[in-house]
Amino acid sequence: MPRMSGSRRHAVAFTLNGRAVEGEVEPRMLLTDFLRHVIGATGTHVGCEHGVCGACTVQVDGEPSRACLMLAVQAGGADIRTVEGLAPAPGRLSILQESFRTHFGLQCGFCTPGILMSLDALFAHTPNASEQQIREQLSGHLCRCTGYTPIMRAALAAGEQLRRESAHA
Amino acid sequence: MKPAPFDYVPAESVEEALDVLEQTGGEARILAGGQSLLPMLNMRLARPQIVIDVMRIAALKKVEETGGALIIRAAVRQVEIERWPNLAKDQPLLAAALACVGHAQTRSRGTLCGSIAHADPSAELPLVLVARGGSVHLRSRKAKRKVAAEDFFTGMMTTDRREDELIEAITFPPNVPATGYAFREVARRHGDFAIVACAAIADTKSARLAIGGVAERPVVRAMPLPGSSALDDALNEFAWSLEARDDLHASARYRRELVRRIGKSTLEEAVRCRA
Image (cartoon, rainbow over all chains, first blue to last red; front, side, top):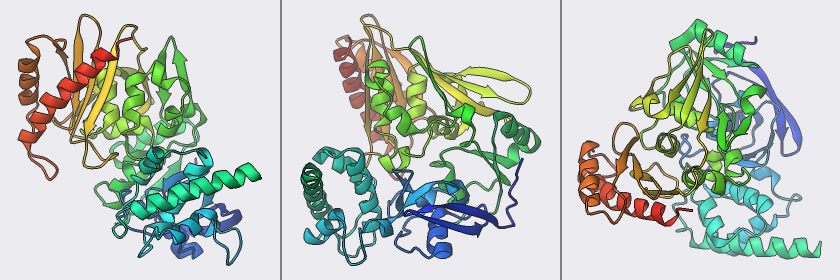
């Protein structure tokens, strides 16, 4: 049985935004730190580091998850998406991102990557997500700038536009 | 806010996990979904020498429905049960409470057995397991045993689990016909730990109320049916018996008042839901 020593580094490999990544980590390294310090993907923000604020939310195998409540070694073989994976092309924003810009869904932007990944997962699972379901999903995030109202506006508008686009697709 | 160093064992079978547990006992912690253990590691409230990850064990990913009972093994995530077909019909109390467990972003990884193992006095799942008269299946290298939920929780974040034992599964008994179930909680924010959580079960002759967030563990008691003149006194007596304490979130007095009021409205809702 493999027992990974706490004082050594061990290889970890997974898919990040469709691309294979790997690195060497101590077992205690959090996924947040692996993404930011080993891979250099700093779009995922680190707030409270105990699962309360939601800033570090990423998608693990399609489900929104706290990257601060996951060890990098647990991510081996997983399919992970972060805010860097949302834009369809360099210089172009996704519908959800554009909607946040249009409706002033952010000010300082610290909480935004986590919120975007949560809402992106919600709309992927539940394209017809109601206002109540959006609020429910947002309850896992803290934002100290906006008072949430413009975030709700941005999310509702994005949901509508995503439904329109999929109807025309 | 970073975990102290530990050795990591990605166990591939229950036997492997039990071997390591037997050898290392109190030095080891079981890691399932990590939604309770990781905060403890990050804040260094827990500093285990060894972390045994059980999420790669195929045998622990099963859910069984036997005669209406739901047997949920250690590596089953909360989101899987949330999406379980007919959950609201077959396990109405679990379905209602599950929606209040953390947030979608933690239910995606957190397990039910993990929440039972953590035994936070404010947590919803221990409360529901106690209210339903469920059980905990424990296994060590030497033996297997089944413990009634009411006996499993022994105090604040302490359980009857021995150091060499793994919680292999929990069982929620079948829904009883002509019985109503209701769950209500008061928290600062939807998804936060409950200040007071109430689970009520009522049939035509009797009612039971379980309270979480007040005593050091969830407590269940027989209650007079709503409409009985004895109910208010029984609720008041129940509220005082829980020995509520003041903390950052609420005073003891406020908690007692919530037990009396929310306890009553939850019982009334259970009566209305009798099918």
